[in-house]
Image 1: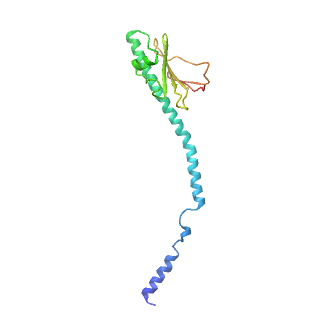
Image 2 (image 1 turned 60 degrees about the vertical axis):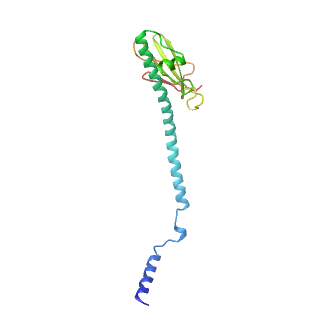
Image 3 (image 1 turned 30 degrees about the vertical axis):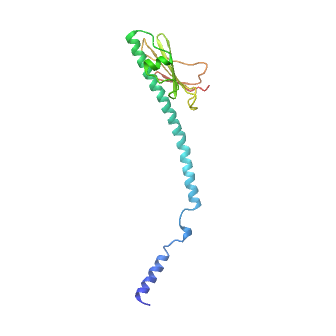
Length: 170
């Protein structure tokens, strides 16, 4: 044998130990099952957190609109001394509230001197917030918030600086 043939034969024998056959390439069934279990656990943890964030975002929409309506009504009351508007159409026209059924909440208001209350009620098209209420109120005389409870429907009420979240179910 020539030296060139010997070298090739030695290289071939040395590389044979490092080669893998067709069956040893890829992932085993156990490895794939472990990955699937890990992904399932991560999804089970992440999904509830994601869903709660969407609920918070919807509530933020209502809180922002309620705050804007209350501030506009309070400014108008301070300027004119006239009772604030309470109908949905007047809320839209005079205070910039969204029109009925154009957002996730419909807005209504009431005025029992000197307390002005604005209520955002979840629309029926979204089952997550259907009939839930977010209520904001202010005392026009003192500028402070008034505690507000809907006794016939209320199971728990969270007071949050003038915005009251009613999480009761119908």
